[in-house]
Image 1 (tube, rainbow, N blue to C red):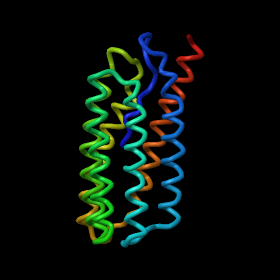
Image 2 (cartoon, one colour; image 1 turned 90 degrees about the horizontal axis):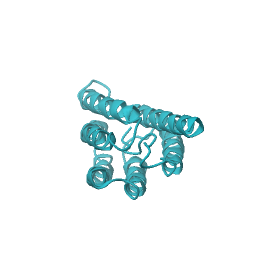
Image 3 (tube, one colour; image 1 turned 45 degrees about the vertical axis):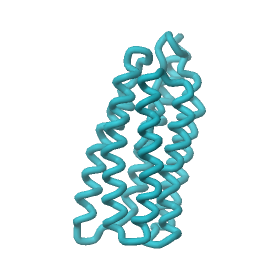
Image 4 (cartoon, rainbow, N blue to C red; image 1 turned 90 degrees about the vertical axis):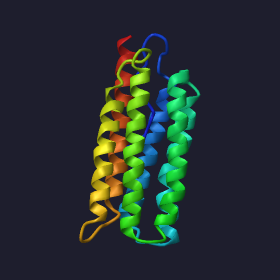
Length: 187
């Protein structure tokens, strides 16, 4: 879910610049989730690379989003990109250890990134309507992040739930894309 690509813009911006970002978010997250679900990575360097790709994709998409963001949102987006880059490194290292380590790192990243999404959505609410998908996504990211940390302490932790996290992120990006499409046809 860790995405800072937002929903439709208000009159100050058409929001059309968001279309390719939202579409890229949907495609990237779904392809990544399918690969994780099919491969069901264990621990090792293959898993390290696969798990690091998701936050690295987030770094790229957040960086592209920052180009059209206002100054306050840009600060939040830069922090989100830095956090995702750090998460990529931490996940790669954790994937060489054990599944609980991966879940703890993923959970911590999801919590902090979710809080960042909330900051971005709130800073954009004056210039862009339709921030509710970003708000809901951010809040769910926090909740799911905590759940990952709890799963890490469980009897048989698995990595496949992170695929569900990516699918949920794709769904929220798709909602933003559909809202953007609806608002552009209504105008």
